[in-house]
Image (cartoon, rainbow, N blue to C red):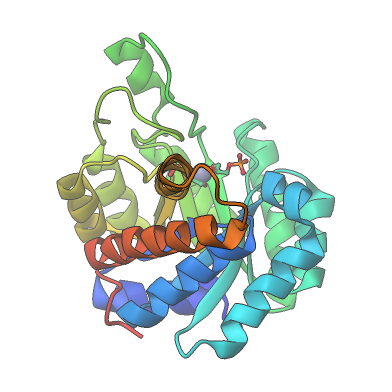
Length: 284
Ligand code: G3H
Ligand code: 13P
Ligand code: ZN
């Protein structure tokens, strides 16, 4: 099956009131685990590559691996750029065959973020590629942060609405309490902000930092308008955790395949559980 734009997957998710999992990939085993999970669950799926993943594997390898997986697949697959901050990288991904790009202009003031995001939307939409934008900064897990400081990091609802309406993005990332990386304490989600933005605009909201968010919060977020959930850290933990166990159990093994194959299997099962949680299992 050929790759599909993010918009197609999220339009269906909005209709069905579920979210589609977006899983970060940077090598062959991870790509295979994600697509095998989607096939076994009959789930649509988003494979996303960060700029770091593209630097590690090569843009041509990422596209070739995902296209090879999609060619065999019978479920719809989107290839998405995660946190693209560089104009040239975003355009290179569009040219290389990505069906969706995130432009993360959160480092800029609102007006400049809007202007830069609009430019990307114009280019991407001209060739049928979807765009995710970000307003407000979704950081990493911070130490010793006060309630007031945490509140100040959340995206104000009027800013999110203005950004969404001005840019025409297909999916919207805003800060509502999640963070990238492993949480030291469970996050407190500003569910009211998700609901307010989704109700006023119909925007398809993205949960970044999805690893480690309590299952009930994920379910509530989806009920209120989250349509894409990003997971990376948990995949790293599952994959490397099994590799560590395999190496410990087989200290004399010299065939990498004997180590990677069970790790790929563990990763696949972890992703399947996420697909069931997000409600996208059985939707393809
Ligand atoms: O949001 C960030 C993703 O986890 C990707 O991380 O830039 O280390 O590839 P990375
Ligand atoms: P986690 O690594 O916290 O799962 O976040 C992933 C993410 O948001 C990618 O954009
Ligand atoms: Zn993110």
